[in-house]
Amino acid sequence: MYKYDTQQSIYTTICNQLPVTMYQKQYDTVIIGKEGQHQSSFNAAVEETFELYVNNARIASILASPAQLEQLAVGYLVCEGIVSAHSDITDVSIDDQKRIFTTIAGNEEFDLWFEIRSSGCIGVNWEHNEVVKVESSVHFSAAVVHSSMHHIESEIYHSTRGTHAACLIDRDGSCVAKAVDVGRHNAIDKVIGQALIDGIAPREHFIISTGRQPGGMVLKAARTGIPMVVTKTAPLNSGIEVAKRTGICLVGFATPDSITVFANDWRLDE
Image (tube, rainbow, N blue to C red):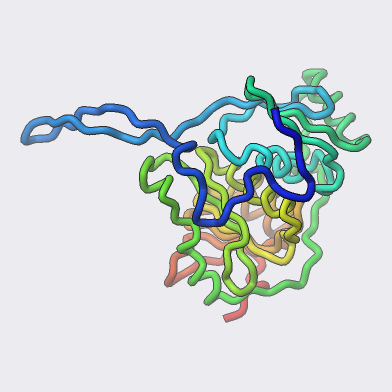
């Protein structure tokens, strides 16, 4: 087991130096084609189940890549609105049974959320009842978005074809945090968690994701004050509605040559 260090991330990584071996496992395969068959091998993306605890209460089972787990926990708690700030998390520890234990300061909202969840009640739609607004006048350059798309490339994806990536980008186009995971939601949690641990203010940056953007994904960014979300794929209608409601500039189908803006285009300068 290791303990959380608020001054330095256990898994601090440079954007292009993620631990490839933790993300994949090699298997023998047989490739069969029209002209016959031959032996080969394949690097499969690794996923494992981690149990997340808050104040000794188990709140989630998360299927995730087995790396950047501290970042996953911190990002999850903030992005899901369980805590309002990184400073509310007082401890994180991970044991050898794949359990992530977190301790947070007294939080009446979490107590209510957990009580309702534990009672088995359904129909409580937190996304629509919650009021979130990105209070920021930050603008970004469209040219910077185009030039930043290469940051989401990863050796892990090209090896496994089974992972997602997320990057936090500053206004000059530099990647300040990066995460790769089998789940697109996890990649968002991890990259935001990395930034918070490293003392980087997400609200001064935009996020690039390889995954589709439903409402829940966009809301993760909104809760941390990120003013723009960029994806190389498509948003869903719920993602567009959340972006419009929260003030996030939502960009889809992003390439080095073109982008499509679905909400709050005033945040982008030509």
